[in-house]
Structure formats: structure tokens, C-alpha cells
Image (cartoon, rainbow, N blue to C red):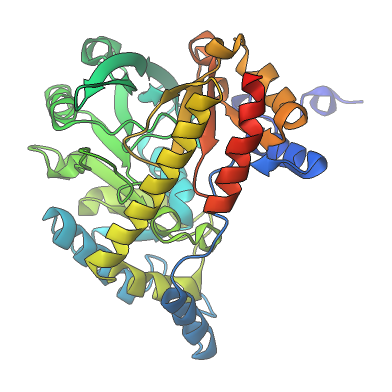
Length: 402
């Protein structure tokens, strides 16, 4: 056997990444017949008229062959119109918008394009697991800044959340820092960064001449008094920010894999250079349907948010009654809980035992941390499910309280 044959098959950049926790927990849900509140996908489809738009595109032969590399013009125009209508951000559909195979490809392409080996990337921990893998594939070095539990009040009522320590963020920047990877609304904690926090991030980026990639796929899922503020709207940020969006989370068509990038022309050109050698193109007919979805009137988005808010409150209340400490999210469709009031401290062990104990699957937040001990007692539940499913899950989880 040659020395090359004895070398591990998986390259060292990806050696730490095996089968994702989502695959493990979804398989456990199937094998035990449990309710899967682990992986974040809805169990109902999005608007009927948008499904029909995809069918029309298929029947009309639109997108059945390779679409244009940057995305079909109709979708790029719709993305630009959405950004202007919602946030006052003006983008040229031809030079400042790029369609991708979901937000995950957008993240990968952005990091592969913008990083050199050894560049440091600051990401808010806990973070979506693809961030770490994409930084590794690009040869970058990830530098986590941890969102920490915070006790506050909301309307005079005690409220638990996760917040960013801005001093810790500033201290994490070095001469090797190339890029900030920001996610708001934030998965998995449900935190929505405030204007004050985003202003401080923007000032830091300008002062230290940093690029920013901002994952805003949950932009239409913010609750209570929270407000989604795109980082690109802040002074000095439009020319240094790559903003990532997605149809999957806003329209409940996660399988269509339609995402996008909006940024200044030089940034879009760089990201496109990497993206074209990943999927090249994808989701042809669905691009036409998403173009129509982005033009839906405000009542759609209001009803969508109201539905998710009701589900958030249903599951949050049930988890609290079952004995969990609940961090009520200001955005996304995930709830982080602390299992220590249940006499538990190891999220991995708890989640692996939960299907047998209660017939429910959740995700241990520690998988989203470099500092595993910081995430050890936290467990994430998804509430993007039908109301009867959530009601049954709550019923089962309450058995944990004895």
C-alpha cells in the first residue's frame, strides 16, 4: 500500500465534519416514530398560487433547460424590487443581484470567493453548521464570538434572550481579520440584532476595513417589537456587505433551493466567480415562481408572521410548563431552551434519549458552538409545524415534568 493510500480520504480541512446532527436526529425520529422538531423545515407547503406559478413555468418550458448563470431576469428584478420596497436599498438587477442554489450555496460561494487561506472570519456563536464547514473549505480560520444568555424584561415581564457582547466582538478583530459573518434574525437562538448592535458592527467594519457577509434568510419572521434592519442600510456598509436571502424560509418551499445575493458589483462579480463552479445553475422553473412570490402583497407576509407567532407562543408555553427554561425568540422559527431545570446538563445525551422518553426529537445547541461547554445545556426546538403536531408534541413533552 502506498503512503498516499494510507492517508485519510477526507481532506484535513473537513476532518472535523462528519454526518450532521440533523441527519442523525431525523433518522432517530423515523426509527422511533417521534415528532421531529429538530430540523427546520415546514410540514406544509407555501401559497397555492406560487405552486401553480412553478407548474406554469414547467409547462411553458421556462427554466427546464439551464437558466442564465446569474439567475433569470424576472427573479433578479423581483429581488431588487423587494429590497427597495422593504428597505429602501436600490440594486441593479443585472450587476448587483445573483441567484444561488439556496442560501447555503450563497454562503459557500461568498466565503470561497472572498477568503484567502489564513484569513480570519468572525462569526456569532452558536452558528448554523454550514458556516464552519464553508470557512474550512475556503482555508479560513473561524473566530467565534459567543452570544450569551441575558436576563431582561419585555413589557415589564422577565424575558430571557441571547445578546452580543460588543466589546468581545471588537476585541476579536485582529490584523488577520478579513470578514464578519453575521446572522440576523439568528439561528439557533432567535435573537434579532438591534439597531444599536448593528450600528456598532457597521462602525467596526468601516474602522477596520472589513467585509461583511450577512445571512438574513429569516427577514420576514420577526416578532413582538423586534425589527429586521439589513446591515447594508447603515452608513458605510452598502459597498462592503454581501446580503444573503432565501425563498425557502419566507414562502415555505425549502426544497426549491432558491437563494440570492445582493451586493455592490465588484462583490457580486467575485461571488459569481466561485458560484459558477459549484452548481453552475439550479432551480430553473422555481426561479420564475419565486419572482411572483416576492411580489406578493403585504397581507401575505403579515399572515405568515402571525401564524408563526401563534405557533411560537404555543410551543414556548408548553415547553415552560414541561419544565424547560425558555428563551422566547424574537425571530426565526426556533426556540432555544435550557435543560438544567429538568436536572439535565448534557444536551447531546438529552436529545438522544428524548425520543424514547417523550417521542419528540430536538437538536443539541452544542453542535453550533466551538466552545461546546457554552452550549452544553441548551436544546433547540423548531415550531414551523402544523398546530396539531405542536399540540401533540407539547402533550408528550409535559410527561418529562412528571
